Amino acid sequence: MTLSDKIKQELREKGQFPYGKRDRAYQSIDGQPGIRDMNHRYDVINFPKSFDGETVIDFGCSVGAICIEAKRRGAKRVVGLDLKQPISVAKGLAEELDLDIEFYEFDIDKGLLALKQLIGLDTFDHVFALSIWAHCDETILAQMINYYTDKICWFEGHNATTYGDTKSKMDIELEKLLDLPYHEYIGETSDRSVRQNYKISRSNRIDMTRKDEFVYFSGDVYDTVIEANHDYENKKPGGNHLIDTNSYRDGKYNFNGKFSCFLGDSNSSEGIKLISYDPSVTNLSDKKEIVERIFRIQSKLSEAGFSSKPLEIIDCHDSNTFYYGIKMENLKGKFVQPSEEWIQELVDFCKQNNLSREGWDIRKDCVPKNCIEVDGKVYLVDIDYRWTDAI
Ligand SMILES: C[S@@+](CC[C@H](N)C(=O)[O-])C[C@H]1O[C@@H](n2cnc3c(N)ncnc32)[C@H](O)[C@@H]1O
Image (cartoon, rainbow, N blue to C red):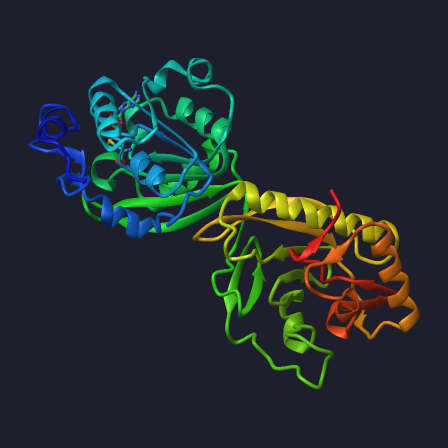
């Protein structure tokens, strides 16, 4: 849909920053030029292809390009805040494009309390704070980011010449101002001077983009590595287990199955189980429902001694999406074929408790790649989204 001449004119006249000094809006949008090339920025920061079911807020949203793009990509709730002129243009754009976005005229310096009164207390999956911190009180902005960020804050600085926003300064300042534990530097935008970009998050970044490869645990960031892909066929029972010499490099190991994988550490009593989702499931709340179901089933099985103990559901993200993992008891044993007697007990227990595996006999899961023996006790570890319970 092409924009009307009226809105194009408003973009040119009221969408500028600084106001009255340019011949075009600050942000490019729908073919209209801007001082900032939004497509370049989306490329650099790897702007998510989908925001399906997620929530987004943009501090200093200008004419609303980020909000509009997030809404178009499926976001559930989108809020944009800026001063009078750009917000009037953003509202006009949303109306013309028929997008349900909450744009508010709001001066960030009014503080967190005023903002809570305006937009409510709900936090957001994505918080954007791009090229804004020099234009408002940075401590107040930081309080807002700290409060409203549920998962990720996307942060862009200003240029180094005028504002001194070098990477080393930003590293220190952001660490000081924000209470989000994970800092990931994502590169420079260069459409208007050079600016540093960060993804600062509460959730673990676990990169599962190559799900059919192994993942490698290094500190807080998990990365896919090809060289870890050893073939253990005939050496270890079933599947792709990283449980030999190389897997203990740095004490980390994992098991990567088609429907779930487990990231562990030989020194730790806990590991993280990641669940692959049915590809049709993209919505965050659907993913949550599935992981809660797996947690419930795993808890039931663990209480009865058939499986390892799930501890808590944790937020994760990779460069494309958010998802959930389960922090689990880390079983350190060996893979075994359970006895017929053990299998029968498990099958009976599942029947009594209405637990089943869609289109599959639970017995068929009782093979060495899914079963670990520790101190003479056997545990089934491979519980994935195909398991159902009666709730
Ligand atoms: C450099 S532009 C960045 C716009 C947008 N975040 C982006 O990166 O494309 C700064 C924006 O912050 C807005 N702004 C400046 N001071 C503000 C304040 N105190 N409260 C809210 N917005 C403010 C301006 O109106 C302008 O739209």
